[in-house]
Length: 231
Picture 1 (cartoon, rainbow, N blue to C red):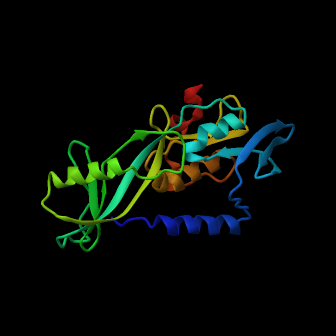
Picture 2: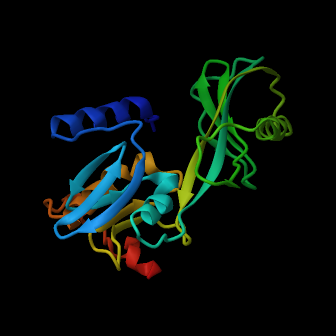
């Protein structure tokens, strides 16, 4: 299967949202939100925005957004995951498939000729933050790889980390909060947010009045993903 160009996909989503009339506000942190007779008054980025609904798709910050809105958190917990790009001293093919250690200690895949992406399969519990790779996790990843292959590492060319966020039962959460119907959850996709986002968005939009999706997505029962399971 092919890789997803995440940056290009994000850009396409933003273009589509703007064409549909969405306003994208950056560097505009949520300060508070209060219920009003007709919805919400949201203090964000120094201004007040009125909204009929709030959709909480804040990833690692989902519980903090809920708390700022006076809604009980449901236990969305972020975990750090590290990935590095290695340049090897042997001509490993770019078509190298994803290979996962049977014990779950690491995984890697070909990136380009002589290069691989490698992760120590780390899952470090952290608070929401702008994640960065830790040197110890980079070293662990390389050590685990070199224990099973004889490829010399010429250089660590890139390294990065991200936050994978889970609900307590590790199943995504989407739908209305059971105690505050005007507050909509869309969180806890773990490490599969970019893959599951289109389907989850379609199912959630249908709950909010959009046409129901057809085909495979339409056949998915949203009940197991409801926020009410944490009530």
